[in-house]
Image (cartoon, rainbow over all chains, first blue to last red; front, side, top):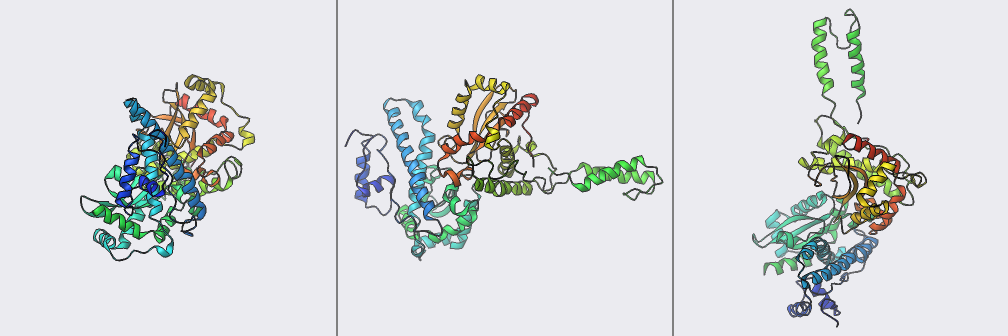
Length: 243
Length: 269
């Protein structure tokens, strides 16, 4: 291990914990990771998480080609650039350069948000035959808030399709009201940091998410993505948020 | 902007009515001078309120889809023009239904007042502007900034290469955080050139988008749809290749126009 600020988390469980407070990660693991990372002012280097499935796992909804480029190029670039921004942040903090700290806001928001959003996204997708919304707290919360699962799907689809330019559609948990609700965010703005809603399920509507397979027809992509949602993960996130 | 053929015919008929002796019947079916005056006034009012349905249309590209190869690929040009631009036109027509027909340029200043005008009107103007400033490489490569434009580039940026570097920096993924455009634009006074990035379908003509209204002379679409099929995430490569199809003759024309008139360039459609 070299100097703080360049620690690399090798253990993949720790790596995953460092990247994301996943509800399925044991508490001791996340605590160990947090302790290890906190020795660097900005939390050390982030790494690209592996997909929980093969690149072709959610075909034909999203092609292997898209998943490969999306993960190894787009998400990877956010991770790389986040690390660069964090190094600059460390230097600015160490030297007490407040102007430089403020100047990094855009890069941190964009790349940090991009890393968070994509990590959440890969986790809430799965192969078609594993996508099933069973009876349980999530289904109940959706029905309480939207009347029906189809009602929620329609609302979130409409909102996601209507996003101008680049952005995300989210199903989120509102801790104040105790209910689930839909939201959209522009660019890579992360849901929780900018709205307080806990992200349960995200849909990437940047053109890079669907252009290879759907060209300009975003509605077809948004309508199809419901077939490959990992409802198990979405429910785990809700349960964790409600604790 | 189409002028309805019916209106043109009516205008001709109207002019003729005033020059013909009163004994001749006219299209309005008037039987005496007073009747003609009344009908003519109503008719004139109808002509003065322009046809407002489907005011805007997608202008034809000034070149074939494959003309900008290999820098911008034919499939991208086809989808970009026939699908993306067409959608903006459909939507701005929907948004302006029943309103007076005005050139799309005239909708830009106050576009921030109405979201559909901002998104779809901006989208229509920006793309109509974009197609015109490009040309096949063998033509584009023979063009360069005029003496006046070159002088202002040097004054504002130091040199042409400095301007290009600044433009490319503004077009980089870390500068425009998502979808948007990069512009080389003149201030309304006409004495300064700036490079500005705008999000989504905003442009510098819209009040409130930049520090002051600015008049674009060159623009680059950095939405992913503008380059994804050929370049995927490699936006910097798309940007540096795009210079090969910039038609500086058109840019010079744009520059002379905005400096002389202190208003934005008009576009077709």
